[in-house]
Length: 411
Image (cartoon, rainbow, N blue to C red; front, top):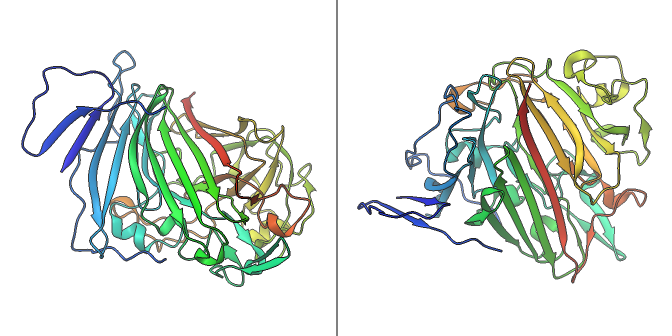
């Protein structure tokens, strides 16, 4: 069953048996595996070759379809957001996941700039976090341990001897409640998940809301809001694999990256931060000016050798808690520019070092080495174990908020 919600007032509505169209009002454990036999309902796709005429604006809309069924019978819903510029974001409520994001290239043709899967089974089986919302704590926590108010907590160990992205059954493996969201900036979807006390070892019952908005200026804005009933730690972030060429068979090595950061948090074994800050000047970590990702990625450098490429956190300039531009990525083939604006103090840059062709994604494409980049706005990795890092503690009565925007243009 498909339901299309138009954002402007409509008259003369025609109601057909399997389709209902109506206006919507503006609003101020372990997850089961998917059933391979139950396919996603077909929905109209926008091909990457479709050209968007600048003079013809689309009517902003939100479309809901069933993406698949979990083996306990719960339906997973796909929300397709289309803005007035014709860009399209597809988001599912399993893992609060971005399935695709189509934006215009310099010729006006839509290109899907995120990697992922064609069906629910791919996301249920996935262990590489394609397009998901990770947490409760994005990134690594050394030995999966932290101490809060004198009590030591042991988290799930899912990355060797360390904890990564919230554990093997983090919030990215959960079915979220979802509803369409209308705002002045464009169509959106609001997703909510309540994580019970002690899930993956985290203290406190956590209520987390993530709202995606596809802005009319071709930005994907992500707003986070969370509360807890016990002192806990929290660091959710978005984990799309980006390839701005729109062709996932091509590497990202020629894409030009700029990061507004003078320092990084260097790592030791297991990619756990040492607790120190290191200047980027004179190192392969210096992206203060536009630099091709592949220019120095294979340099003989201890940090690059530990990460098998880039897999590090940059300490962003400017005060945190204020949304500001911190990063720009440009693909010379498509002409697509992505800027990241965020209120977070850190940016994890991962250059797809562990992609090796064994993962088959959309249209059966084998994702090869360094064919995508992940850019995660966040607090610092292992912050609960380093008092000199920005705090990740959330207490009852406090509200966690975060805003991050992936803004697209061309040149």
